[in-house]
Image 1: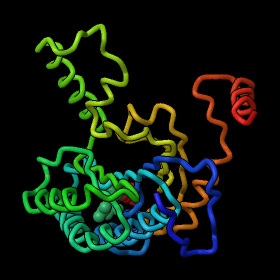
Image 2: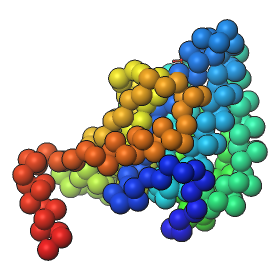
Image 3: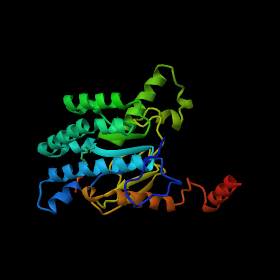
Length: 259
Ligand code: FPP
């Protein structure tokens, strides 16, 4: 992947970058309400942040960026908010396709695309197809996404393979199971950022988040900047990831790697 020049003075350390960053973009509603504005204005401001953070991720050299844009539970919001969000999504997809091509961004979707309105599904499918060959950044939009639903879907698919005699249940591994998730073939998220101050995963990437580092900030998504993004990456870079081992073992491992 070619690194792009950075468009701000705050430089991330390019060593030990997270390969995959996933973001729970929370706080649009509160951002708007605290200004006496309609919630949808908060979502609109949130789209500007999406544009900035996608650009930053590409410049920094992140391989995969996953954005939680609409959960399977978000359909329960007032109809006006849901239709407003769908309309913002359509405008975003239409306006960003040229920038995705210029910046070699490959768009993908995690979630039940079939639940999206037809016009959005078509625009989304077209953008995914057009950008499929791009190698700069994989941008996953989680849309009508629920992690438990995704896990059940993978269980169903692997059960079907067993019933068809194509898979021995005793040979089912974590890797085979993960190949039936929306994120098949992608590295698990190393870093999950949540804006808006809540300490929860909200049915987001529950399987894939097993060893993710979690960074929560009180900043509402519309106020989240490129600098905040770099700060979250720097915080990640300070952490020791032990994957179940002891701290001493990790130090020994890293010493033997440098010998
Ligand atoms: C959570 O904030 C945010 C959402 C449910 C939607 C996120 C959508 C966007 C950022 C814009 C559309 C995205 C794209 C990719 C075009 P909230 O409404 O729950 O905020 P609150 O907790 O303050 O009420």
